[in-house]
Length: 348
Ligand code: ADP
Ligand code: MG
Image (cartoon, rainbow, N blue to C red; front, side, top):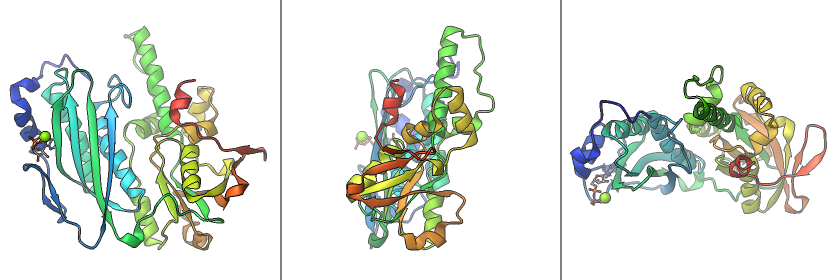
């Protein structure tokens, strides 16, 4: 972020209300369920005949993001997308978000405009109304808290606890990319600290950098499953890494699992970059996190409906609880699946 930008309007010049007015001028409302957006003491939302689904996430500077390499526009985009991902993981449709931010005087109006441009871009892409929020000051870093609100028919909602023995375990997209993107960014940050004249070496890494900086929520997978007439028996989005999310499904569903290492989808660039860093690509997929793919289980009778979907991989199956949670490695050896989120990986 460029703090020396000559085009710098201090937030104190606008004041809290001026800032809110400024930020909300580009907001468009498109859903008929949005009765009242920004401007009153509360937003008003009307869902009739559906369940309301609510999810919230807080992002703290220095804990969840590092502004030395994350552009504010990307941060805004990602902070909305990760919330939408949670709503899709319930097999529901997100429709509104509420955005709260805490800012220090370090941030200019132009910087916050960038953040909002990213948030509004995500809202536009996923057809979401930004209906309110809160703005306050912070003594140090930036804090962003977003709440997403959506709806689904009662019978369509998919919980974490519905997996049954013999269900197929499926995952969308590919895994480990966001974690490898983070490794590249961390490496270049270290290089830059030692020699600020060196240009960052990001060439050829676009895909994994994008996975880290500008992830997408799998709205398309929810729509695909709907069009195939498949309602998953359980579902979760992958924020902490495949192994930890599989264990959540199994624990809540009271089942075991057999995961096949060779079936875990890993993009060639992720694979190659992991090797470059002397990391095991499978470990990156199992523990990397932030991929925001959907992990779900389906009845074996639905196999024919999903088998030709390029973007869905069948990576294992659900077993009875006493069989345990196992991964069959490429060599044929069997290992117990352990939860090791990306935090554990980072501490190495
Ligand atoms: P109150 O004092 O009742 O909390 P505010 O002055 O904080 O009201 O908010 C006024 C309006 O502006 C409300 O509709 C609120 O939802 C909206 N708002 C405040 N901050 C933000 C923000 N960061 N982004 C979007 N809307 C906001
Ligand atoms: Mg307020």
